[in-house]
Amino acid sequence: MKKTIKDYELSGKKVIIRCDFNVPIQDGIIKDETRIKASLKTIRYARKHNAKVILLSHLGRIKNEEDKTKYTLKPVAQMLSKLLRKKVTFIDQTRGEKLNKAVENMQNKDVILIENTRFEDLNGKKESGNDKELGKYWANLGDIFINDAFGTIHRSHASNLGIASNLPNGIGFLVEEEIKKLNKLIDKPRKPYTIILGGSKVSDKIGVISNLITKADYILIGGGMAFTFLKAAGFNIGSSLCEKEKLDFCKKMLDQYPDKLILPIDVITATEIKENVKTHERFVNEIAEDEIGLDIGPKTLEVFKQYLDDCKTIFWNGPVGYFEIKEFANGTKQLLKIITNTKAYTLVGGGDTARAATNFNYQDKISHISTGGGASLAFLEKSNLPALDIIDEK
Ligand code: ADP
Ligand code: MG
Image 1: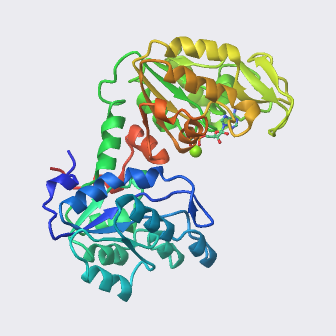
Image 2 (image 1 turned 180 degrees about the horizontal axis):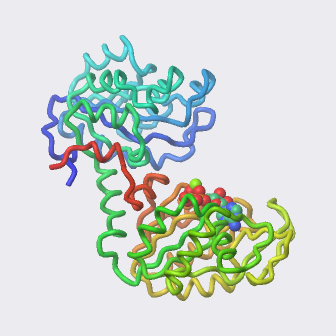
Image 3 (image 1 turned 90 degrees about the vertical axis):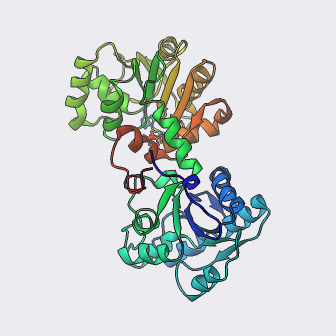
């Protein structure tokens, strides 16, 4: 078990909390505050226990000076002040005199937000490359480090791994909750347990397939990746996505798990990927040479529904169609409806899948939508998670 914020005496201590404030901001206005709200529990706990709270986060990617105006964390400080009903002091630098002074003068329960950690990337990728000096500098600002940024748990950054290497540390409530919920898919998931996998590429999902196939009863395959499987099964897939170098992997999986891997029987095709294009409903043995498969068809939805209806656990990663274009969104939408009508524990992971669930307004009907896209997959694949692995055990 990892140490958590609860394992520390916080009173009078400077507690550095790595948050995930990587939120969409347009012209200084925050478009989705879910991640900010998700961080409040840990911040409130630290304040309640009389800590001095120093917050750090990245926002977007910083490649040039202009990106700095676009990706300043200042609007987040304003939003946090409102939500906490306490002024959050924003420091418009990632290091320097102003920051040092502000930290020195902190009173118990004060909150400081430091500027976007990725501003340090402009000068030799110091944040993303986990520059040793930078990690040490930030660590020196505080007494205890709490990592509550689940979305970057699979990354080695100065603001997570770097600081944690230099201070007593633990995880926050958000990371603790994510681990608990994702572990439900690994430790004795309630059966029947079905996984829906989609998205564009097989190569992105090989780790998840290999690791979860033994845990689940069925894996339903949709999205672009279904076509490499269909081709491996002997179908002509026309101009659909195909990863030639993954055909062997797909064939091997189909041979080994013929009753577990469920492929589409019909698909929606078009000759171009654009709005208002003419679409065709095709059985998988009817796809024409110039057609691209872009969604699962209605008969596949009926089949998938039978595998999902009486499930006790459902994990979904990867949209089953090109849902950004309305002509190819039906499969993903209908599946959201199907899984939210079951009694199963439903967990959605993956950045685009989470976006689809929210866009189509199913976010409140799903048991858990992971706040980390790549991070949730890395967790399920049991890959190394440097920013979590470094955290002290109890
Ligand atoms: P996640 O971020 O949830 O892990 P991915 O990044 O793997 O999901 O996949 C999402 C992308 O897959 C979406 O942008 C979607 O348009 C694309 N996609 C889904 N089905 C197809 C398809 N049949 N052909 C091409 N792209 C597809
Ligand atoms: Mg994605």
